[in-house]
Image 1 (cartoon, rainbow, N blue to C red):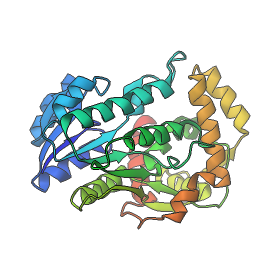
Image 2: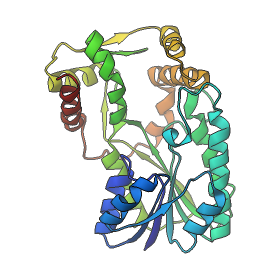
Image 3: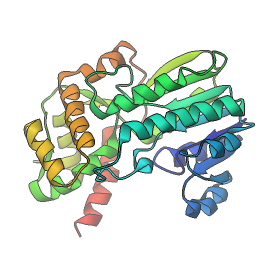
Image 4: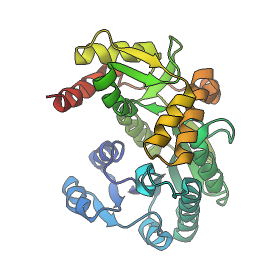
Length: 303
């Protein structure tokens, strides 16, 4: 099949590109960085250098595709420390660009990388934008089939705790305890997307993706053992304190507000209500596997 993917060669894009090529598909990878062109072509894919903020570029690139993989990369929109950036409007624009490009290119099969929390417009903090992009894509003609992929929290988000571990010997967040919550590896996301691309498309479907369900205390224990800090714990501080710290660091206020609201939804379980109603088969990559990768990065940075 002729497949076009957005997201360049990121945590999901790289393994997705490799697996699709290994399966014999013809692949075009969209990247906003010209420096990625040679790397993409070396893997055996065609590079389309441009931005998803450009609807005309998207239309041209998507034309002739059997399937397109659409995602919105936060880092591609702008810095979370840009206090003037309107993330909601930026996501809305990208969603409409995708819609326009699909309509004008004639694409009829879409795999859209959305997110946990996209089932609702209430109480999910910054994840609200994924709900809105899903709704924009749902406005496409009925003969456009869409698979909405909703991964849970990425293991790689734990890298954000590196500095806290170094300075405080703790994972710092607004909740802790033994209540399990789902996590996912980008490798399992890529594998699931490939699997769904090769299955029939019909109508609009939702697919949650998760690798393992573990509690905050289990995360601390597993990461701690991997880095040689078996006493690593979760340090729970009020959401207001986290919020103040993010603002003091210069973070965009909408991002800070959204992060704290999202952690509240994680703590009370509301974020996962729809996930548990449609719980998927868990993937292959477990937290212990990721912990080895985390440990390598941690020890490199603490030499």
